[in-house]
Amino acid sequence: NAGVTQTPKFQVLKTGQSMTLQCAQDMNHEYMSWYRQDPGMGLRLIHYSVGAGITDQGEVPNGYNVSRSTTEDFPLRLLSAAPSQTSVYFCASATVEASKNIQYFGAGTRLSVL
Amino acid sequence: AQSVAQPEDQVNVAEGNPLTVKCTYSVSGNPYLFWYVQYPNRGLQFLLKYITGDNLVKGSYGFEAEFNKSQTSFHLKKPSALVSDSALYFCAVRDIRYGGATNKLIFGTGTLLAVQP
Image (cartoon, rainbow over all chains, first blue to last red; front, side, top):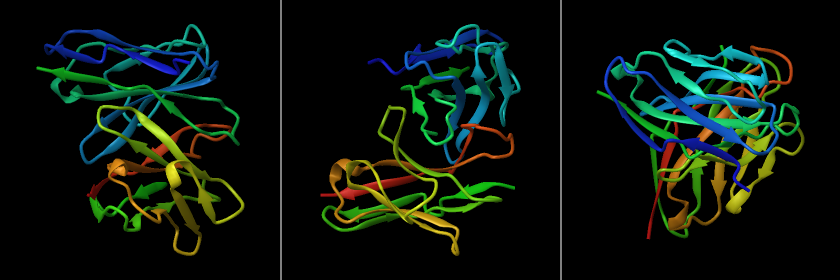
């Protein structure tokens, strides 16, 4: 039972490089989201999706793109990495059923932008 | 504006003593409240939630939380702390700004719990 799988676990980029953080879930959850975690700031929502083909912006979307072509996958793209994007990134998934409202998180991707 | 506050960056407690990690919230309407725990180099794990019903909610690993509407609080508690409880704890509230059956959460800044042997 894999749950939410994120790759890679660690990544170092140079300013201006692009990359894609992968996220996959095997629980058939409709809802998926990306957060970034920074010291003293908790988790902040970057983008989210309520189903295949549907995405929307969260609290801090600038510099990031997402797409949702399948239920299982929700990749996060950094278009032109900046040092301010150095962070730990978490993907999460959940059913949209309001009464169940529990998010399952991946183990995270630790990104450094030099 | 909706928000969650965790007033303590760190809580220190001796093993075997009771522990409390504080959380207060500000939302319009009835809150959906959550506690998550994060162990080092891991993702967040769900501990417990309050939606309706009993003000005392029981969760995983012997944790419980008390919902207090008049004080707008949702403090996490455990009667007897273990060294293995040492971790980062996050309080969260469902973000209702976007309407519908949304799972969007607003997280507090986290409280580091350190349990000394």
